[in-house]
Length: 388
Image (tube, rainbow, N blue to C red; front, side, top):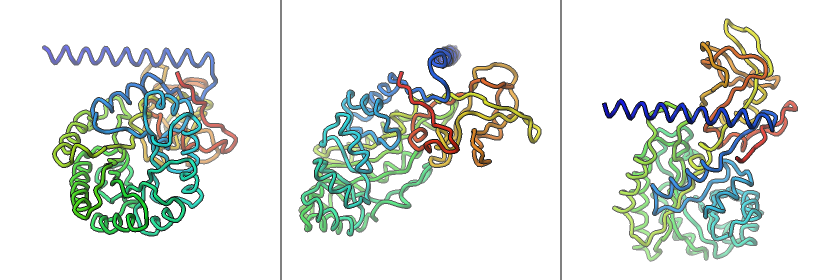
């Protein structure tokens, strides 16, 4: 009986959430033309506080590559967040919006000379590396910089594997830390990344165990480290009924590993991007044309792969397509507006029959969507971002 009541409560809450979102879409359509991306400030705040509650020992550095919109950055500045930047442009962006240099990590292991010089001029001291030539470059152009060694770790089960391109082998870590010290740099810690949208907590646990061993060896070598960057990759739900994602459970296991393996004096940081901004985004599009092709309804939307659905390519992301129209559902195709057959969103979306101007919307699309959209390909602009 109790389980039945809980399930009924969840269903009622879900229906209320859907009703609230769809009323919000209708109201916004009266003020703005589609396509538009609604970013809900309350969800940004909720996700940030959720991260802080579940991992209180870990300071979040928002990875602005996921969505660098100024209003989003300002929201996280107000909340007290720090920032992960990958270029001088991102660095200047967050500084211009009010972030301070001590709250920034330049988390790109390969940096241009110009970007290193910019970091020095703007007093952004902390940056990552994973190879010896990078150390020579940093030491020449930013002597005394605080460097964090990124190591290669398992990315098993992650949607996007990031150890293919970045990360030093763990057995070369001490050599690189010593080399950094000998070049006049300040080796302050380690970092790793388990891959994007990682559902496998074992990746984090194994990486922490490897890192703890390097911390001990480095301390025994006379170079104590004080910062442990556990990267990003924390997963979110893209579909309402998606299973296998439980951040709270994952965070609990990470916390236990941290407490078991590391000294309390070690400062932990992370680089969440998708986790913080993904659930806040709702993309609203409309049907601009329809036909019947290959024995199914075929709908053309005013946003596509080259714009705010770019995450389907660059982020290997899958989305749940929803409509305001109700009715019997049919297996249908959805495509973007450009003159390219590659601009196809789905060949098997289960949706009601639609007509021109009907709305198709997607939730949980705030990350790696508008950020990687191509500006005006074929003359079609990406969605307007609206913070609500």
